[in-house]
Length: 229
View 1 (spheres, rainbow, N blue to C red):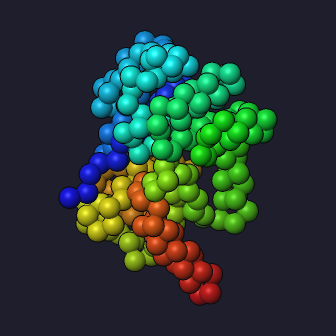
View 2 (view 1 turned 45 degrees about the vertical axis):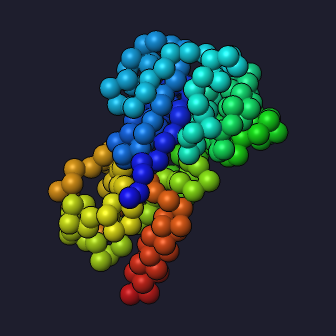
């Protein structure tokens, strides 16, 4: 039986809050942590565990059991010192995979130096994806959440057109979860099971990397077929 993936999100700004909720919607076990009690209260109903505490303090971080999670996300992107310290402490606590948010190139280089396995720029990445979409049309892209788990954006294969998510049953067939559908200029987060897939939809899919790669290749072949028609 496939177990639910487990993630810890440390820092609940816009990025951390959104990620924690999306991971929970996708069926993952999520622990969300922040020093701000209001942010923790806001996310508490969505996640498995919600903790108030300072992730830059070793004594507190050591109590979180980070070595037990598939991935740890450092969502503190606006405070270099805090994000660096949180990354160091997460690795020292035994976290096997740490994804950290950076605000600029220097920040990213420092995070990599202190042990972050992957560094992302949410604002830059969003701009790059939008540019790619404008220039090349639909696209697919992936953001790693752990060594084996990612979120990927893929073009909906033509064979799925008209079928609902419930009918496609992607969770059972592929072990993935569709956490969003981008249709023209509108984004549907956590789409309803009876929502039908349309030809130009872009699906935001969460799952294991090897499975996502197969789906990505399927989407690419589908796009190439359209170009040659």
